[in-house]
Length: 507
Ligand code: FAD
Ligand code: SF4
Image 1 (cartoon, rainbow, N blue to C red):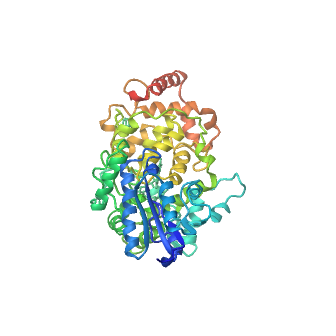
Image 2: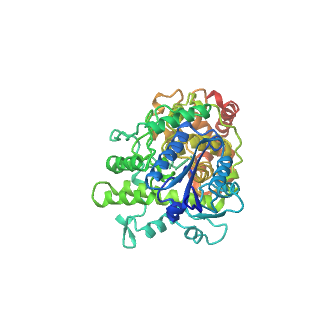
Image 3: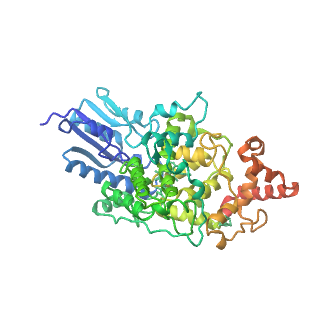
């Protein structure tokens, strides 16, 4: 019997050969522990496709590890972590546990509690982020000060040398977002994304998910995602070769029935460590340097990866756990049932909810300016909205959801992630999508039976929070527009909004 002294515990979102606990382990003395916990999958009502993704990635990674000569103790379809951990340590009696840090606040501690007291636990840093805690903390002049994504992003550009000419940004500007806000005009073209047919392993996972998680949202039918590093690399190549050049200009455009446009659709793989953000950013830079992709697209993609993604990770770890509970605007409405069915007369919401239910994916502007914007102006409870997003998206994890939902989308953090709420009326949606043309509602009206709920709720949202927003100079234009409205109009909008809010199911 080989003398194994170390257990390396790898969880479902850490299945990478670059996992730092795995990299530091001695193959001859280590045993890898992997557990499919049905109880963990049931903690909230995760979308079925997300569960298929995670469990299938785990089963494929187990084989990869075994092919590479690692000994793996794998617990398939197990009731919970506790039982598997107890059985594992009874059987192998290892004296050390190595684990890469968990991405969710409090999870390291929860998992450690399951391990026998005699075992030494070593937690290693996460492999899929490029910034350090210190780099972010050093930017805060006082404990309460705020750091902007843009400042942090510049530091990451300098640190990695990405899109830099010496100490200056390539092309003379750090950010080309201004070129990236085109509506879906006649020049808008997009390429169909590469999809992956479920293999035998994924099919067996689908059966398992249908058995244990039958009442979860979504369906296991038409599963299209990659579940191995090799296929995730192909998905990345598909994006870099076919969509990166066009990624930028129409990044904010939305089209009915088309959830996949020129975005990368790589978040499911980056967040599970199948792909590394830096490898993607470097390849994107190469596409620009070799003249195959325009700078505004490449800079936009690099900014999402080494700017926004790093920023939200650091914000999460700096401000949790109280951050998740913030509710600066005092929003407390329950989510309407149509968030789970898509059955609403609002064409934009119905379409984006239905495609989310089908694929567990929507692009950033659909998340922020449709689903998120509606949640913001309707005053839906931040915790409930956060849970809904975490449930429904295949790429959803606490660390990325909390800053994006509580901070960026709902402004419930009081303005750390963004200085003003991303509230918008139908005007924006009409400009950036093709939804309004065929909608039951009129994007120009704010009152009356045909009034678009986005308009009514937008103005009511500004009125409800007028005192707070008046002092926010970034909302000057919005508040000036509101100030120009006569009293009778304000009363009418307010009354109509009350009707909507007391019966959200009816819209
Ligand atoms: P692309 O548009 O191609 O961007 C490239 C990559 O940049 C993404 O894959 C992602 O890794 C990263 N990225 C871009 N924007 C962000 C951001 N704001 N925060 C963190 N990373 C970012 N992202 C998630 O990874 N998981 C989530 O659960 C998630 N939930 C969100 C919920 C809301 C309400 C909002 C507004 C945003 C959310 N985001 C989330 C951020 C962003 O919308 C997604 O990362 C992106 O849409 C994923 O699709 P993509 O891979 O095609 O991204
Ligand atoms: Fe959405 Fe309003 Fe446009 Fe209808 S009119 S699609 S509800 S924004």
